[in-house]
Image (cartoon, rainbow, N blue to C red):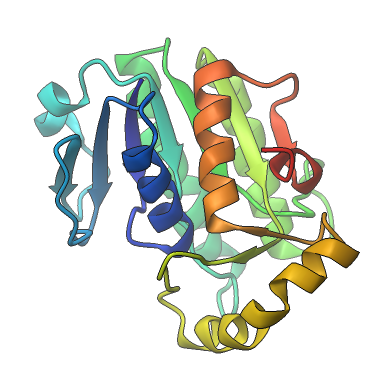
Length: 219
């Protein structure tokens, strides 16, 4: 399987990249992002660009892709709905529309979030925008489209968030992770588990397009 990964320098993206490089079923990984990952691997090819609106210049690298994992995202904290929509819905759909035109046989995996609002009418702004994005992706016509809805994610294997206060929370919570997972196994997952789940779903499909915490923790 050949995987295209957006957002490989973010916390979730780092986890997905690590698992892709470790998984023998993944033959090639192409990352697209604004920064290089700093990693070197025989099956890794990196594209560094700030222009996601036109990926035609990279058509050769994108040929033969079986699955796209889209981990680009931003916090809604301090943002207006218009700004968050532009950085979430507009960006995601711009990329997805280009990919589906190039290859409808591709599987598209989108990192959404727990409590995303599929009705698009709820009180939480971020949940409405995420729900709108999910619904639009499901209508595009990919062979498969799966919306991952993780809740709390603990980073493993030296992975760090680009948000400093997240790292402070993770540093405090990491020693408690085994206890938390034993007492409430559906309340927290890890970057490793999310990455493995995404690879499995991209490769084998899943009975539902919405992959919730209870599903992620099975992998």
